[in-house]
Structures are given as structure tokens and as C-alpha cells.
Length: 120
Image (cartoon, rainbow, N blue to C red; front, side):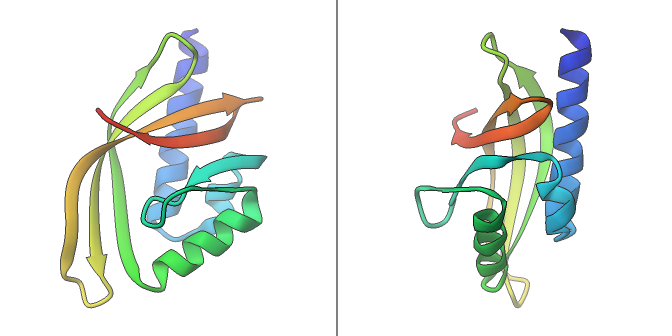
């Protein structure tokens, strides 16, 4: 189990770093082809790499989010709950959101298969 947890944490660190640097291709490389991803600022989910690419591109045209993981906690069902510090700025740099939130990940074949926003 430790190997799986360590691999999951490394994968998630890679995904967060890619997201924060706006490297969509690198971020998507950490995910399954049919990954389910929440539309945090719109509600609902998008499914699949191209839908995520479109969502993030649209999101980043209006806001500048930065999401830093602070803790990783595996749960009993094999998912990983990540507490993150999220700072969202408008395109002029003004902070419009600054808080800690939770992200819950489900994995398949060593890749991210689903992300949900949760309480931490």
C-alpha cells in the first residue's frame, strides 16, 4: 500500500505543478482518457481530456488560480484526499478568493480518474 500511496502523491504533485504552470498537456498526462473533473466555478463536471482542456482554457481567460497541496490523506476506499491552499486572482492580480479546500481523487491504472471538491 505504501508504494501505491507514494506513487499517488507523486502523481498528484506533478498534476498540481503542471496546473499551476498552465502546462495542460503535462497535467492531462496524469489522468485517464475519461477523467471526470469538477467545474469548480461553474458547477457540474467535465469528462475527458479535451473537455478539461476547454474548461481550463476558458477558466484561465478570466481568472488566475494557484492551488498548492498542503496535506495528502488516503482514505479507506483507495482514494486520496488533498487539502490545498487555493488563491484565485483576477487578471489584474487582485485576490478574489483565498482559502483551504479539499480535493478527493479516485485512481485507475495509476492515473487520476476522478476529482471531486470536498470538505477538509
